[in-house]
Image: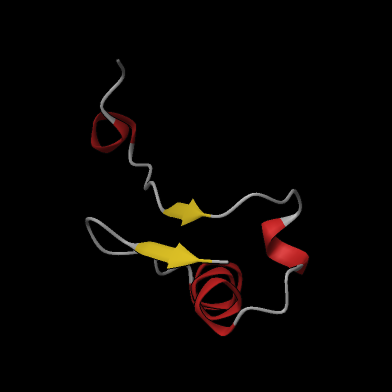
Length: 51
């Protein structure tokens, strides 16, 4: 398995059973997405959200 840190990437997990997590109206997901898209801030190690 590729280590995301080796290419400057970040991984965040979403626990749930639906597609389109970015459109789920979930503040945990929306905040993480906005932080990345607006501030280029990646989620911390072990970042998780639940739908």
